[in-house]
Image (tube, rainbow, N blue to C red):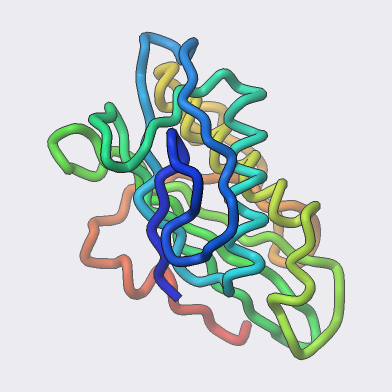
Length: 186
């Protein structure tokens, strides 16, 4: 499902009918503003929870998030995919961050194991899992705004299914977006 949203100054999330926390904040480093263009993939109930968690995590970081209709230094398009492999469930995610010139400035990606077995992958995407995704993405985004990226700190690689996802920078060209969202059974 593709649902676009603007977090700042709106009463409803477009297409969901659920209230969204309205926030537009000051205090981001260098006055940089961020607009979330979309979150593609999750069903409406997971989407709504993700928006609320992005709101609270952005507030904690004093990240200036504005409506997607407003001018912003950076625009984020987010993609989430739920998968079950070998009875284990995980949520893979990608954030493409674009600058004012609509050029991709950064790609953040990770995979968050839910720690639960099941056939309905989205049912296991609880608030803890979604918060870890929001934290990893916003940490990477904040690092870029501050002049560092997750690659600068050389985070340890976490094997799939053995711990929380770590945001990583993906320097691949936009042509590989489709392959980045394809997951093997390995």
